Length: 150
Image (cartoon, rainbow, N blue to C red; front, side):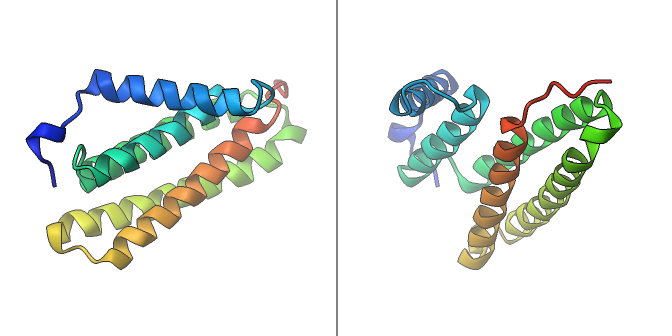
């Protein structure tokens, strides 16, 4: 639930995420990694902190996560369409897995939305578990070299 004194503006939230993403990259000496994954992980971390302090409600957070999954899925499908046939198999598997996870996540979100404040902790935990799986697939796919074009 929100409490007015603790609300954070979207600009403040974005700044908090940018700082957290920078710190992630800094901790690994700016070697390797993916800026987008740093951002997504930082976003999850910041939003969890804000939710704990009342800055963002659960449904809003889950809606944002679903939007992230949708954007990444579209991006991966676009990249997949430009790949050589021999490079497509592994990507296709992960894109299909991401699509299934996204659908499961959407189903949990709909269940939580329907139940409102009375949504079970189990449903919330399931949504978090699915999100972690989604994040893992996104990270794995993003870490691959994308130089497999036609």
